[in-house]
Length: 135
Image 1 (tube, helix red, strand yellow):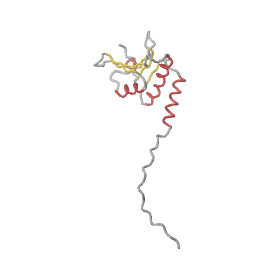
Image 2 (cartoon, one colour):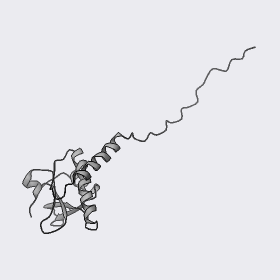
Image 3 (cartoon, one colour):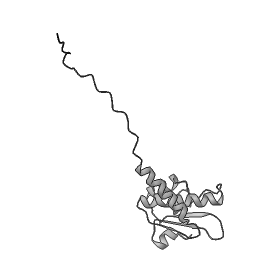
Image 4 (cartoon, rainbow, N blue to C red):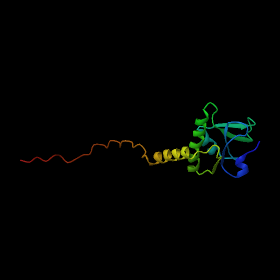
């Protein structure tokens, strides 16, 4: 089995497998578990061959999605992978500049949004001086 990430020296190679319509994401041999986990969090499905003792691990966009949604998912994954510090190459057949830019804007909006603030814990009552009485 050919592994394009090994061949091209990248962390992720996104392409349409020859003679199919399946979008693949190859990772290099021995890729860190964090990369595989991130690809799964981004919606790609993990595959291993042979089962039980993985020699080859790759991810695919889920088959149950329509062709356009598959392309959307692949393009939305790219900015998150880049932000995490991975090198990514995406075949022009899959890459869509507008979809990519939308994903970048979503990530920027999330990053710019302040984290929800927890209300400050109630402070214990302070012992204030007794109120003054004026005659």
